[in-house]
Image (cartoon, rainbow, N blue to C red; front, side, top):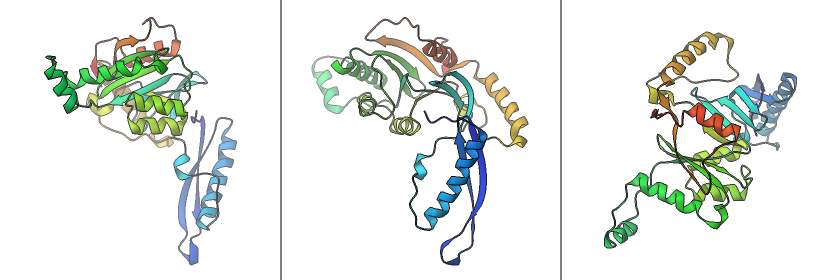
Length: 275
């Protein structure tokens, strides 16, 4: 999992080719061991930027950098809650597979005609999408997986248990495609080496003004951040992030403490308006 406890910000000037004007550059070092180790990585990253400008090769790519997010709570080493760039809390898990499915694909024309010719009602897009999830869950390769289905504001969320899927593996990528996961979501899970599930509402959906969260947070932002979060929590109270619908391929009873935490944090059984 690419979630780090310590972040160190460092500035430097990069010499440009052919005597160009030096350019100010900022990098962030990260570590789970100590701020000192994060600082040493920041120094190396600055040196690597200069090396790359000079035409050399480095052992990292710009798109490989982990997301800078504040750690809010650690349920276990494999399950960590962070705060994302717009202030919502996110559960990052190495062993609990979340699949986010955004939007409802319309019923294909030929399938719709077939239903009409058979004298059957054409299903609404949401009903059709849920049917596709149930169909995928019944496939032999997933029949042994316990799949919890939730409705979200934009689509569906699945929690898949039972097969030991790992982030970024060929089996996981196939799972994401088979269930129609949002492409950007699947790509982010690959990059972060974990599965992510938002636990609290998007601010605009609860009529709370937006704010960009920077981590590490500058000390002068602490008071404003505390005020924003207090209002955000208050406005979030009537809402739910997802609503539990059903469990496929098994019993709906839950004993996994992380799933219980997810359901409580998202208010999945509250009946609140989805946000």
